[in-house]
Image (cartoon, rainbow, N blue to C red):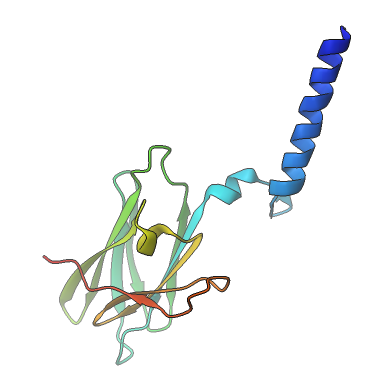
Length: 148
């Protein structure tokens, strides 16, 4: 093997090791760079009056199904945004026969996508995103329901 190819292979191995060291994430004991590019969404039923919440979330590619959340319960999912930045998840929320809609994740929208862990509290007045612990702003970002 030529000295050039040996140096090139050594450089590749060193780069892989440094990437592993910098970006290596342990998920169930396995390193996963894939974990770095995932977004995690948690929707908490915080409706006033201890009401049950039925939610149905989906994107253009994934239907996450209908879920009944008792007060205080959470529904969670994770995903990797599309390479072309078109990922959008929208959810319907029903309680006491009232139906509301909200776009819970819109790629490129700082309020709805600038999070690795997107935690949402659902209130009658609308959803509020809880800021991540390392965020300099700790006030929840509250939104109105989508117009029908």
